[in-house]
Length: 422
Image 1 (spheres, rainbow, N blue to C red):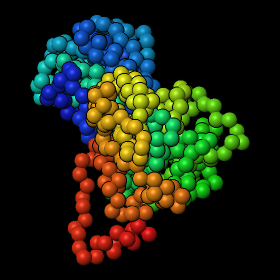
Image 2: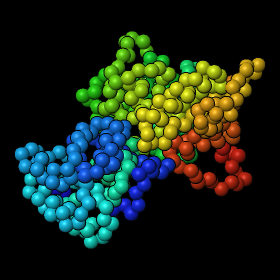
Image 3: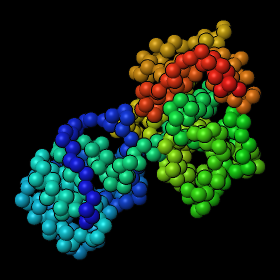
């Protein structure tokens, strides 16, 4: 067993969800075996095993607690992580001593107990326990404990994946994802990368006025070569804080992918970039579903009509059910107010989806068309346009950053804004 340990949590809530600002990095491909004493804890561990962040972990649950664990490993190798539930103090410490005699080096042990005592915690640390969690536990407590074993505390902010998808084709999801990524990089000062997943028809290269010779296709079709250095060579620099992993947008090959085709790319980006914005095309396949469910936060873009309402609700309900320990997806309305077009009001969307839209972006073809044709963001075309504040609101909600530091205004502010626009 190892000698790394974290402070015990003073309060646990069985049904608690992670706070908005909390980010739990996914666990790698590890084996986890849990030995529980109560059916409630076993149910919580079972539910944790279905969480997206433990999707790569191989989890096995047994009843019997400490005694069952000691007996099991007398003749079998130990996994990467052992989760033990125990009610008593003396039985716990004595059982850990017995377990140490049959435990392989490098195995990490998480203890779930009901005694909140500093002396006990120190004894557990001395014996090499990795984490001590107070019962009763919920699924998110188990997820947090296991995932944090493989995530350095100072690296918690690294690797937040944000997926943006349209409820229907042509609703402007790509435009919004690119402008939101721009706001994350410029206004929130976070290093971010836009990954254009529409390999055949992606527009990120056009919108950022970039034409890189390489991009995401090189990584997807060469999974064995994917590592940090390889991905860095494929990135195209847009600004000091924003990079692009462009799509080839050519039709010389067919882009049929398996469900896990993008896993290596996403895992590598997580390890090097604080924020990854996925521009997900409007299609339903194994890999798009996997990308959405595996994201830390999701934005659905919808236009105010009936087909968008139906699709947005279907996507919202499925993603919410598939990610029970995450924040629900967010959605926004786009192209609101098209002249002479009947529309469904935002209140009707909110009633059907049971959630308010983050923002409602008005239909303004002049400025959005100019930005698209010039390869610029809205903020570059018009520094004071009202949609810029909406993009910032979306960026804040998706990243969990509620406030940004505003520069003090001065007599030169209008001139500086114009220079930024240029």
